[in-house]
Length: 178
Length: 179
Image (cartoon, rainbow over all chains, first blue to last red; front, side, top):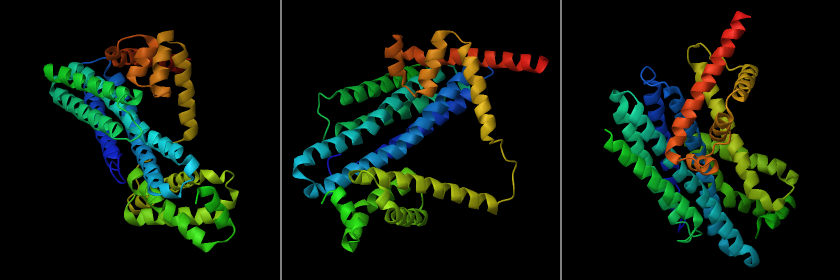
């Protein structure tokens, strides 16, 4: 988030895509119950991941709006506390995209599992979910990268990148099996 | 001017300060209503009015005057949720009645207690992994690190434990019906 307004919609949209990908998995798993004993468990996990994505959507907007607001009135802040307050707000704004990247990584991992074990007729949906999760993880990682409070060596960034990498690897596995 | 001073001036009855407070937080409130909760413009406008009316009414009860932003954010979230609920009720009343799913909160609590008891009958590793994923919302990566098992196996481990949980619950149901 380098300037005012940038990134305001990217996070919520990534969250929505993750939620939709999780919904695809939930449906694919539920419909595969005849051939897969653990399908109900996969569906339950997909539902949990979808709920988390829905919740993160709102949190991301709030953290972003708060940081933008603080940047807008930086000149009015107490000079002694200005840097500290802005750094804190920016760090808080980076947390939801990191959580989104991790969540997308999880959806990717679950999608790879579902793609491997679900009804073959539904595999394409699971693979699609996996690809969507991979793209969302990369998008969320980008939102962490452009946050002014995040340095290249930051642990947050390393975690987001690891999640994106896991989601990408899962997508490759899922594609390889189709 | 920081928030604490702004609040103090508002409480002194300074109209300019009130204008500044609304200006400072208007986009924040609007963003929560529209982007956070997907409200349409006219509903978001209602939320906006309601939030600042409540702010005006209850500002004197704000203990930490420096925490104005989080307080207004909380008001905006609650008001947005109230608006969504109100809209749902309006839609329902305008449509033909449909069978209402069982939403009795007491029954839900009972069901949660039964599941919690069944969980206690599972092997320890299942209790832990299900608790971490479903109750604590931990990621597969976090669970993998904590339990020292490969990340790619967490989803299938959870699924297997859920199969055991279902068997335990079905056993309880059968014995319940037999007794």
